[in-house]
Image 1 (tube, each protein chain N blue to C red):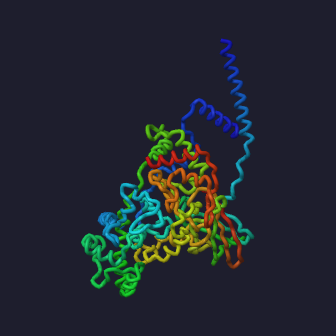
Image 2 (image 1 turned 180 degrees about the vertical axis):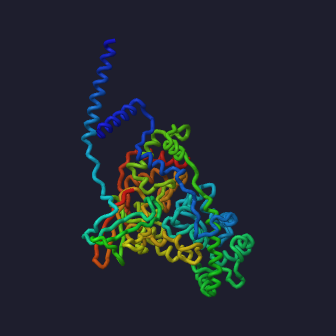
Image 3 (image 1 turned 90 degrees about the vertical axis):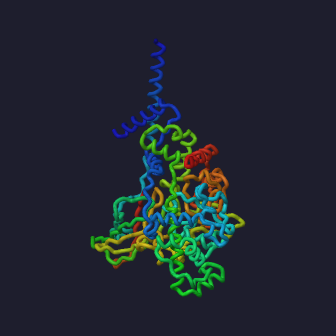
Length: 147
Length: 402
């Protein structure tokens, strides 16, 4: 009998040691690296505009051509009208560009521009760069989208 | 507290894993989500093709099926769509490059799920299934016909069937026997001598031939495989039984496919394709003409009178967004080719756009090594897979054929 208890005790001791090691390793694991800034609304690079970028209809769906809305306001909050918008982008971790050439197709009023032809063909980190020229000047902004 | 709880649950899981023993598939939640996204039951129902108003008309599909298998739809009367797209071989021909009237420079693509593609051919030089179907008909190396001859042939052989679907055939009595803007010099001259209205009439009949063939091809869809049964069981928590159970090697292959080997980056969704074009450094075949893939296809699809912007499209231009927003230049489309579906791939060597690799082992060795592209930039980076890992990937790919 005594020997069984000894084995159980030894087993428990070993288990505790194992648990301690596992917990220690877990606690020492690096905290997950901060991902790209995923905000959908931000100041443009030189602070000329505040840009917001949202899918026109609900969720982002992988592999589908979707239209998004880029909303441009001045720093004072006035809608930016008549902006010329150029779009580029890609996947920084895969060294490739966008699978489509999205374009600003319509001005919907109140600083809102329809960006049509957006397609994300794979999961991962995507970037969309916007060049914006309007009466207030030219500026640019980058949005990160992670699928 | 939260961290303590995670430590506890981690320990509990570790203990369960120890107690549970070996052989049980273990996938993280993220892996399970990816596996579920590849299963055939996530394939949405086929959307109508608004550019082809006959796409879901049964009589059109029936005529299309007749034409698909009809050797009369070629210059020498012996080559049909089915010569290369063999019905009992996943609608492909097992050859490195297709052979019609002549020897082509590209591998025949299988047809399961083809109606879901936004782009057609390896390089996407056509933008609809019906425009695709017209291209081999006049390619001198494939069916080698000409559209005037096809119009006459349809009137003679299938006039009544055609008219029941598409309405009255035009008057072809003064149309030359052989004429096409793409044919021989004599055929081009004959075409150029035709009044524009007559060219339009012939083009309309020709477009309708493509629309009938496309209607038939819309019925060719992928079937359920062992992988799909495994994935459904995994998603529902049922224990996979009989052939739905994966061997440890197949499980390792699946984990690599969606993990370290990065296959799922491009081979994603229930068809295992992102429908996009990539340069993966696949070497050219020496004796074939220069082939630059997508970069040379852009001008071809833009110039095609049967493309979505052309007058033979049904419905409105809102269907043309793929063409409207396509990437027209840039280094990424040089020697870029379409990601093929992997469903059934294990049963149809050879592989790649010109049949460069004769086995799946060679394909995986290529991706593991990731050689530089001869032109443009390969998107693939070396994986340095072990022999065991490479075999496991092959074992997994076979579950998409069983």
